[in-house]
Length: 77
Image (cartoon, rainbow, N blue to C red; front, side, top):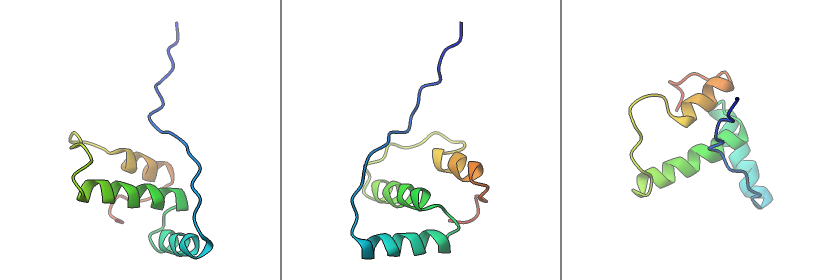
């Protein structure tokens, strides 16, 4: 019997004004990330810096896995 892998990513709609979106897209391009990847990184950094993100176990992070899937190198952050 095959079991489905649990999906740990949730989707949602985000409304952003045009100037903010342009800035995010430019920042993402500067960092060689997708716009979605950049938004995930921004949110993750804000949560980490505020102490609201649980400590991750040692090993690859979800962000590393996403970067690998997009062909990004881990040294670019």
